[in-house]
Structures are given as structure tokens and as C-alpha cells.
Length: 97
Image 1 (cartoon, one colour):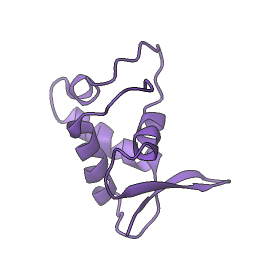
Image 2: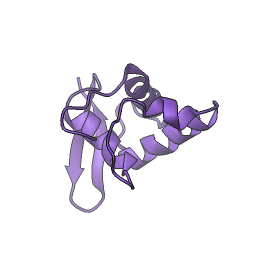
Image 3: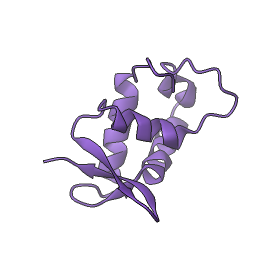
Image 4: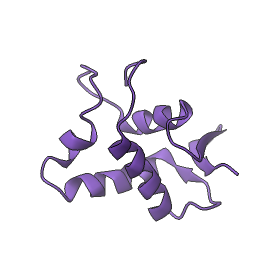
């Protein structure tokens, strides 16, 4: 994800839907769990991945999409979600008050 990249509303909505599907609402959810649900959403439509990530103009050969989710939340693009760090398990997503 480029430093000046602005995620699409489609991607932000997918993160929020994935959070709800992951049992969010007061539970800690990992970015990897969100990714699993976003993959399922992408697979439901033709060109789903291309549509989901059309906003990301990075030319990197191998893009870490779990990192893209974390960075999107970290930058404050996803309303109501923040990251919480746990040294052993990595980053978790939590709902803000």
C-alpha cells in the first residue's frame, strides 16, 4: 500500500463486513481473520480481487494483503476500528467506543 493511497469505500466496507462476520462486537479479531472473510467476498464475483484492490497502485510483486488491512485500519480509514498489539499473537482489531 503506497503512503498516499486512499482505500476505496468498497474495501473499507469489506473490512467492516468481515469484522461483523468474524464475531467482532467486543471480541478481538485478527487481521488474518478479516482477510479470510474478504477473500470469500472476492470469490463470489467475477474479477472480485481486481475490483476490491483497484485503488491500490502498488507495483510490488508480492503484496501482503493482511498488512494492507492492518495499515488501512492503522491509518484511520475504517471508522470504528483500531489496532491493538499483542507481542505474541500480532495485531488484533477492536471496535472503538
